[in-house]
Length: 202
Image (cartoon, rainbow, N blue to C red):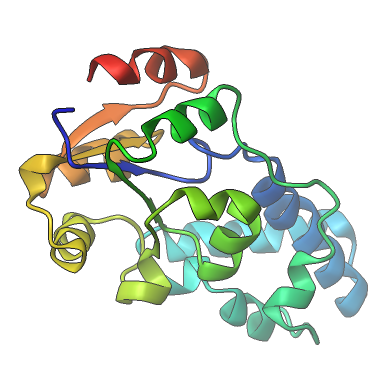
């Protein structure tokens, strides 16, 4: 195989978005509305507007501790995730591919999500990966900037030209990893099996 390491984005690539979307768009606003005595629509609007203000390269954007404090909730991050009813699952087609690649290349996950989400969403499938990285918790970096990919490469001791990254965000997964010297492939959610079926040819 051409690459020593195959790196995967998690949310929207390996896993579907139902778990994280329920948390951010339903669970968190509902708990905030109940705790503050405001309409759910207002709670959703306030959280959305503040998320936009923070932006995806701000550490607070991803931090569960930050949102717990800002929304004055009396739960731990782990307790918050237990309110989510939808269970995380791998996107169609990935499991047999990941099992087939195991032993042929080092498989890793590079995610901008906090560690609680990484562990919850991968579940038992985490054992398929040599490393699972949270940009925030492992490197103190918000979002997936080129510096993150450089640090991951240093951490695992593999040169950038030997790493392939697959993800669904054209900026953070493709542009930024390529800026760090990695090779990248875009995961198109509208054609989820296209990259999966052709990964053997990469």
